[in-house]
Image 1 (cartoon, rainbow, N blue to C red):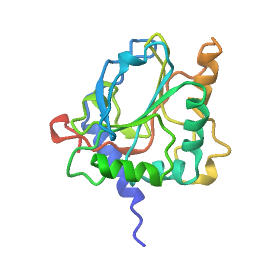
Image 2: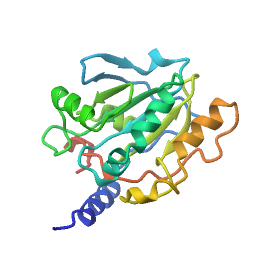
Image 3: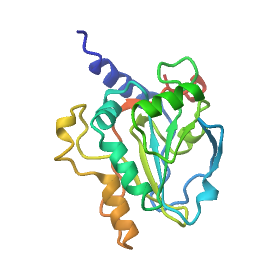
Image 4: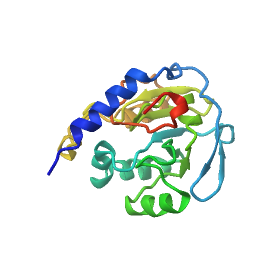
Length: 208
């Protein structure tokens, strides 16, 4: 079978090289946004002031994403933290026509199939939310504190591979950030380099 992973990695490299958007700084106010989920419900970041929020960029078909969902790793992480009151928002910034673009109906069916335990799945086909957070890859993770400031931005863990066998020995940066910050401690590693497949933005963003 033809191995698509090298092409996907090349796609990431090309996209990063072409992209000019930048991520917001750690400790800065999280960019405000208005988005709609696959249920048609509206989500404004300001409405979650006073709560911990996790943003997770998602690309259907990405082997890095598949690694964390087929293994149950991310759904378990979502369930663990939403049960503690954390708002976990999946964001799909893929433009119409890309292989990872999802209509609301497709998104609902897909999220059910991967057993997502996120609070909601937002559809961002124009890429406004993604650009605001400098999201170039899935999984691109952001943790926002109750004051609306970013306390972590980067990769989900320290094992940038597509193998589920690497998950048990990985350091999960998102879990660490939430655990430390919610205990009133500084986040030991507040920023890392996200890994994964390129987000398929609309052509106007300059990303392929």
